[in-house]
Length: 294
Image (cartoon, rainbow, N blue to C red; front, side, top):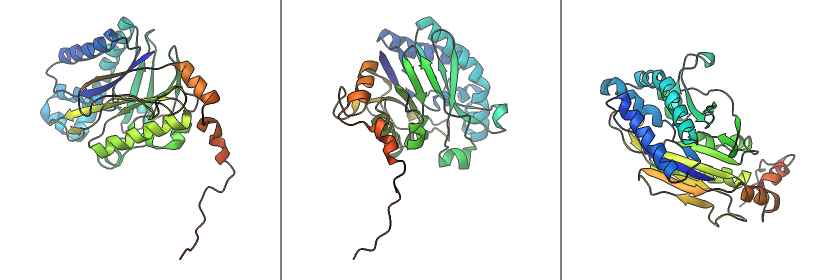
């Protein structure tokens, strides 16, 4: 299969039609390049807040609600494009007020299949900004999606930095990592997390990023990143673990060919077997004992 990871700039939109045209253009470009799976980034849907005007988009609380109100329309558009172009699409995540999960929004990525099916994954662990200033909360549990492209899991941005969440995805062939990071430090943390999860699970991780400045938002005002596709640095994969990467802060798609047979082979007969040997940690005294020296 061919996968596409977005480096996605958010725009100030003057109409719903502008958003529809933009999203259609991005999807069409990836499809024309042969992509089967398109991965948009975390919080890329915040641009929908601009449809309510600059003042509202700049208001942290109001922007959450403005985007959440637009999610059903955005979902309908993504579902239409997935069916029309015959691809799987991970939509840019959005704050969603889900009455089943309380009175605060969750950070939700929605996943669309070409047959019209849709699933979603909520972020598990909030960053300091999300929990202390924005009031975004953890959502529903981790899920695995069985698709025509293999078993797919999703770890939203900060979630990729936690190995136990990654281990819960041990059966996934692909782990999608939609990301939104302000600075190079944040991008690097998520990239390192994505590469670590690919190493531990001997799978492929696909990281997408928001890029560019948004002077209409206090939440996503600066964005640093690029698309990247990573695998275990082992049999059948690049020695660096980097299958493909874009150019920092350059909008566009990063493409990579992914072969499920290579994933199965490295898991069965790699030079090392990290995924299988994970359980060797169990029962050991993994807390280092303190020892005075000198």
